[in-house]
Length: 335
Image 1: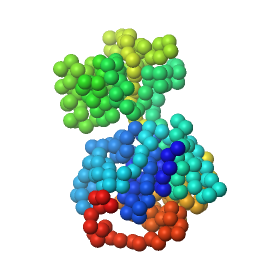
Image 2: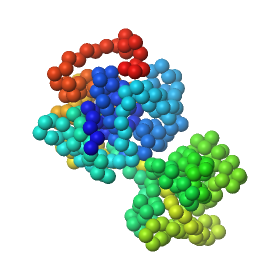
Image 3: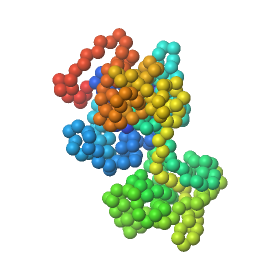
Image 4: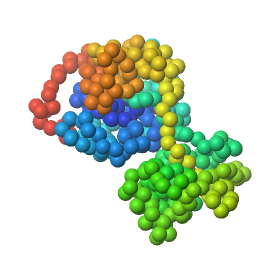
């Protein structure tokens, strides 16, 4: 069981900044996210999208913002449970919370902070017969551990940044063979990523098949073959893994059954500290709602700061909170 002071559900920008604010008050944090890496949408969907409303940055790429936040919280040594979705929250008699993921990982925390953005992201699944049978038996929707594909034949479907980036990454001394399949001959990904794939295709490192799509998959106990519909007919290909990367769909998911006051797909909070109707549970960022709510990363950072000040009393009920500006702390390193 993982024990912590503050458990943060969602490792997007608001969840990461909450680690910093809690860390200033000596509260230990652990984060859970259904995605395989920290950063939320900024890392998974649009890492190269410019953001213009972060203070002191006239323009910053979403992926760079995540990298900066990770560097900022490094001194506080947060823990991470990635690639897992929170299924249940149970409040214990002593006021602590038992939080369990879909893979059975248990977390015990004094405070729970929901920073889940638009909700839990679920993969857009292709309409393929027997797809469910081959999930975790050769069909993956996210790349959690690249080493899993060492010396394997891998087929990736998709035309966005995730498909392009993982194809080029796995083709560099990890997978035995990488094939990238896209339904069109133009890509949605960043031009730099497209150029890289085209160059690797010329070098023979990536097998690129455009104007094509996977129509069926087969195997006995695990995936072994896929059928590809191309302009010239059906192609049968042997493979160890198929990774369809068609994007993610945000859904409220299990959050809807946690007993929180909801307004449509958002959690109602009290705007003085962003607490919910369940004492000890907070919600910050795009997942919450209150009068005057603005769905901005900037607003989520503000909410994280006020949340941490309120959460302190749950973590240290007998402690005396002393607010200090970071400018008088003599630096955060080794704090």
